Length: 160
Image (cartoon, helix red, strand yellow):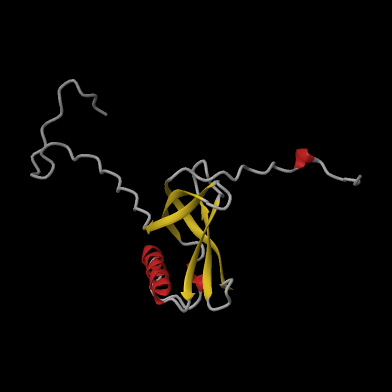
């Protein structure tokens, strides 16, 4: 038995960690860290993406970019993915991965079956820029405004 000094009414319950539905999500890079590969022959940049807005706000997804690896193809894939991220956030020459933190972008998320667990997991399959909001339409000018020939007011219009 363990003595607890805990009030569950004061703590929000843990959310489900089911895979996100496939789709496009606005997100930020909230964390980044270089880690050694399991084999010890290289390093990968682990990026943590946090979904902002919508019903899945706060959910996290990860991407691992094999930037230092004896396999040149793995490095090339990682560099292209990092380039896509940099282009989306407008930071083309980052000196440190922290420069990419908090920049808004859109991640394309798919679901895949994890063969080890048999569970559906998420994978980020692409990145894009957040589309700019459409400019607000300006109210139409009165007829004849451009020519300077504005029609006279209707006789029933209220005069002030």
